[in-house]
Length: 66
Image (cartoon, rainbow, N blue to C red):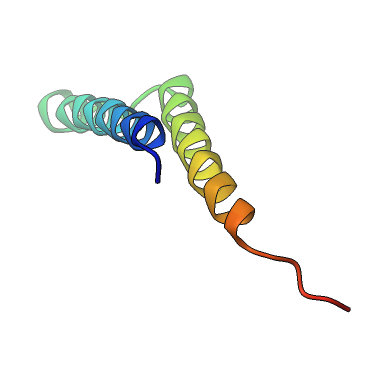
């Protein structure tokens, strides 16, 4: 994985981890579930990370003749 891709992955993971920590604290301290938009935002970040990772894998995979 190239250095810039690696940095993007690390950045995405740090953001997701922070968002999840904040949601968890809200549940523990206030007993409140996170807003739907917050959850969707983190899910979107996870999707973006997955696409970034799968994009790299898909380029390496050669299609089978058939």
